[in-house]
Amino acid sequence: MLLEKIVKYTEELEDPKNPLLGPTLKGLYLFGLWPIGSKFRTIVYNLFHFTTLLFVISEFTDLYVVRHDSNKVLNNMSLTVLSLICFAKCYSCVMWHSDWKELVRGISEEELRHIQKDDPVTRKHMEDYTRYTRVITFMFWVMVFITNFLLILTPLLKYASSHSYREEIRMGIEPLPQILCSWFPFDNTKMPGYVGGIIVHVIMGSQGSGVLAAYDMNSVAIMSYLKGQMIILRHKCISLFDDVTSTEDVLERIKECHRHHNAILKHFLLFNSLLSPTMFIYVLMCSITICGSVVQFASKEATASQKLWVIQYTCGLVSQLFLYCWHSNEVTLQSRVVDGGIYNSNWWKSDVRVRKQLILLAGKLNHPLVLDAGPYTTLSVPTFIEIMKGSYSFFTLFSQIQED
Image (cartoon, rainbow, N blue to C red; front, side, top):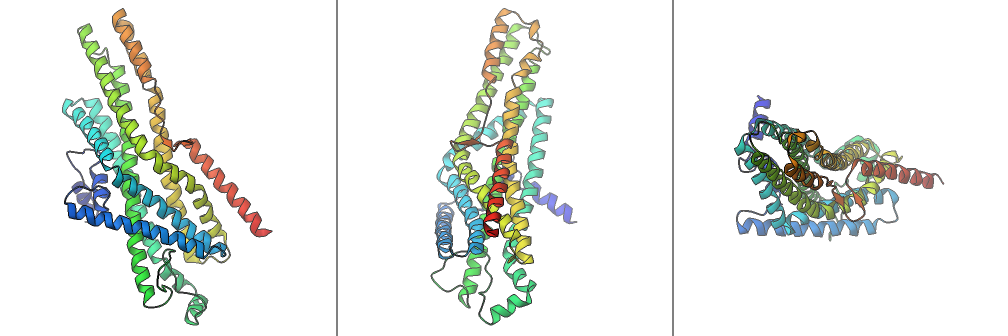
């Protein structure tokens, strides 16, 4: 019964006008990152996004206040950096909405074009990467939901896990546990300000989780589209001379390959320009954040509930980074082999005129697509490995400083 409800709900997220991006677009719309509909709704969400900016500023304010306590600094930094990344993704969607809308429209039009042609091989490839995207999307959404749920429960778990901590709260030695780390113009360590602070933290934590879930999976879906379309284009190149009756038919197919590659290249360049600034901030902060989480876990002051949260949080952060680097790397790898489809075709059957056109097409397809993370690095598996190495090196250095 539960499985049937889940399947029915996921089917309702599909959109015939957007065969691949239907669920992710509805996720973006739910959290105000896809400003369509009534102007009133857009204004309300924009005001809410502005309060998110104020909340991020309050987190940095709290970071300055607790700068002398290393444990609090690490705890604050891991959450504050994540909030900053969430705001960057939110800003990207809202401020460059027209570009995102153009990209989504182009992707959907290209997919609908292939669906109308009803080529069985193309249809199979599209179904494969669409199914893969759905599985990754829903699994990631569940992981984000669990992470946010544990984040909200952290104060309760911390309070319930230690009798001595409860006694210290009762005697006024320790403040009441918080969900996030932020500064308020009132005392949120005591009642009734504590309730107001917790409500704000729950709202901001849930909104941030939703932004991450919707934005990341929309980006992963677009990368899956780019990879899948490269596979389809390679198949078109291989079958250039299959079942043809004249030279004109071959030239028409070559023309279609040029058009298809132009569409993919246009979508890639636009997507890269939108994603690169956000990924620059993310890659820059990710190493420090992962390392800070590991240091928190190794701290003697960490409670069982804090360690549980750190494990879940770090796994989520690493998974998020890996998804970007892996799928971006797959796009690059497919773009490097797409021109091989021409050499795997029956090109030797063609005359000199067609062979000249094939050489031009092969030269055009020999253009690797590499997603950037700002002006300094790329999104790839080697980049992911370097970040993991850097995090471990920072953790080792920090551990030695603590021992000294």
